[in-house]
Amino acid sequence: MTVLVTGAGGFIGGHLVADLLGQGKAVRAVDVKPQDEWYQVHADAENVVADCADMREAHKIAVGTEEIYNLAADMGGMGFIENNKAECMLSVLTSTNVLVAARDAGTQRYFYSSSACVYAGDKQTDPNVTALKESDAYPADPEDGYGWEKLFSERMARHFREDFGIETRVARYHNVYGPEGTFEGGREKAPAALSRKIAQAKLSGDHTIEVWGDGEQSRSFMYIDDCVRGSQEILAGDNVEPVNLGSSELVTINQMIGILEDIAGITVTKNHDLSAPQGVRGRNSDNTMFHEIYGWEPSISLRDGLEKTYSWIYDQLKSRG
Image (spheres, one colour):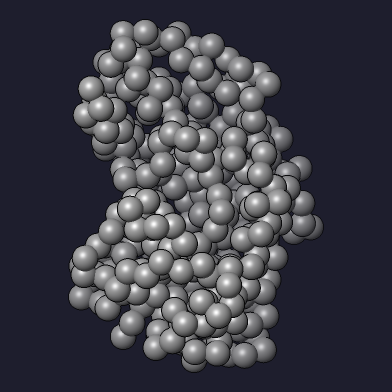
């Protein structure tokens, strides 16, 4: 059985390909980036550089596949998605083409990586947010740009299942982080960005860091290993509705900085930039539905995950001299 992973040159895709190969599966790994820009390249995979926004290329890569994980999207952290809304919306070309190609190739199962950004903004105005359950995506008021594309592509997957019989599955990812990911350049998310800032502070001796907002905005963060496991169980399972895939451990940005200070063994001074992009005030994952269906939930603690993430980023920075 050939498993196709789009976005395989990205952070989540690279870890997913590694896990699938470890199970002895034949994997076709596809990304639009040149291979020297992939976060991980696995020699045992069939590695292909292709642009899934081109329908012809999408059809070529889908041939002979029985399962597809569509992770390909133009995305990043809050600084990126707030300032590149049109670019984020253009991911609809990839989302559409890969789904059409899966149908035409006779692919049995199709996984779509959606996002917690689909949830209605009026339910995320307080740092002490009530955890978001799957029904909170409607009435629709998602994150402008990125969230709208994700919500539309969720619906498209649903209708392809209803109209054409392809088994589509949708996971709503909540802030995935871990080693081998983006930690600089503008697309990084909070755990990687803050790990980089703390590591730089430790290496330089300048213990002052910039923090976007007042630091009281809250989120949950899921370690990559939980994401990889959950994605595969969702694709293999019988549940056809979008489901949260995230940790329910709610923390503020300031609390996460405190954890990183403890890991690094330093204390930092925070300069708060109140004009920087911050996103919604609070967001957490209600895992009731996931736990009822799959019998577990993402549970790798933020402390444990940050230790591994910080260590990897620190080593990357230190190796530069």
